[in-house]
Length: 110
Image 1 (cartoon, rainbow, N blue to C red):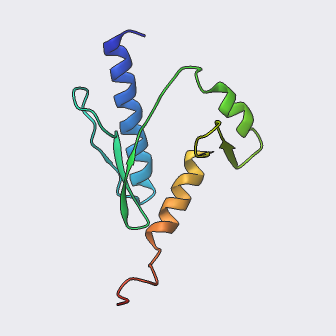
Image 2: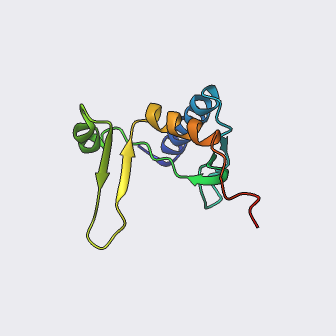
């Protein structure tokens, strides 16, 4: 895929994810611009605005989908790296929504 089509596909995917999260009641916002480095989205989770990177490939993540078949969560780990957690967007939205209702018991403590 050439530059413009690739950029447009990424932007469409980012907008679709924002709409999905907003439909779940999560205040996600798209922030990326093609000419600016940085995160693609901001999503508030546990009271903190999290930077989210979005990647979209035609078949580049097929193995991850294969490993997630009939599973809820996938944890992958490379040598000398922190493990990564991979889960379906529907479960991630449920977790984020539950987290938005979370109140930190240490807030307000002196």
